[in-house]
Length: 587
Image 1 (cartoon, rainbow, N blue to C red):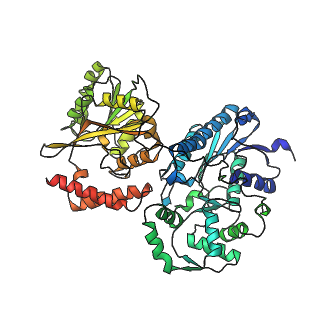
Image 2: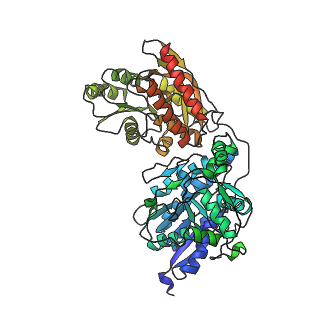
């Protein structure tokens, strides 16, 4: 063997299931291609390693398999510390040392509760574990440049001998139960040897990019259980008689419903996403189950892979943190920002808004806070909208406010807001629509409140202006129930990072509510200010009282709830919201 032609690989995550599997597989199938070392990131000593001797750093260290429903705030912070911060540190050190390739094991979990994922699907993590992986996913890809290739893999459920997670649970049921529900769900899965072959090819090529490896065949839960039973000689009947119980179970609130949806829900990549220039399909479904369930001890599998060495060790080789009491979002925070005077970017999106825009602009111009930049993003209006906006340039210059006007085609309101955020430079961002307006000290109060509370995201009371000119104040509330009844979008201010992490998806009129749900499920510190910061006109399609419009809005909101992993019980919330709008317009 000419060792100079071998690639030196460092696996970070010494005891990880995938790391150990890859090392054993590569030794057997590519003995002259790779020289592999491993290191644990549990101790600080790894930071003293000379990474410059490696061609590829394969990062699999991380925490997985959290009990999402019972996690305390301290536990969540540890997930971000390990899954996000440690990953970015490892990638940064690898780049600084001159390593040519960084391979990161992300996960399909970054797409949250999506049943079907295409290349155009925007990741939307449904919990803090998925969000911690997604932040790392984004962070390492941002480091890529010529000479430092970053390959990110987002696999679905990985299974094989010694694997953890859902597969061992299904295998246990397949070997013991006489009956099993017949459910026609569709799931992408990935056999461990198929993943290892894919990794070998990626490292051999030295390439970067985002990869979606999966088995060639998708599978239903019932089909997988039946395959396992057949391989182990157990007789099990898959019957439709039990299917209604699964359907009912999916609607049960709490842990039972979560388990039913997790076990029998669909979660798949479209087939074309997983095609690569190499064939990495080592075994089909039937053969992979046979190899996984082969008789003998775990360490006697085809590629020498053993089970995790320690109880509680996760797929990625780190132990889950212990439970510690935490605070619900909206509580008291530490980390106050003393004497905080950040630049605040305010965006207003417009299209043919000549009748109302001046009032909106005036409300920003006369703010009592002095560190503001204002961006008007116009969708190529055909009336005097841009002319009116241009007439304020000199007055904004006199105030010392940066003032930007962009007029060009866009794909709707939320595309324009995303554009404004990308063009802005503020540490804090707010948005006010072209028919609404701020109270005079709104920005000053918001900044002071964010500084005193240490929050990342806040919203406040909102004055609702009815078509007849009368008004009422909609009080902001910090609610455990995920509802918009206590949330007021025109009054929200957020640190820039939140908008960059969760850009509007451009799917519906309620993209703002989707953003709100994502922020709720992130580790962001959220607080509510009980003061009126903005005025909102109750007109337009969001307040159309027609039955068809109400049904359309209700369906849209319900879909957003489900896409973010919320229970089917939230259908009631959608009905209540639309009924409330009808009554408010009627009085």
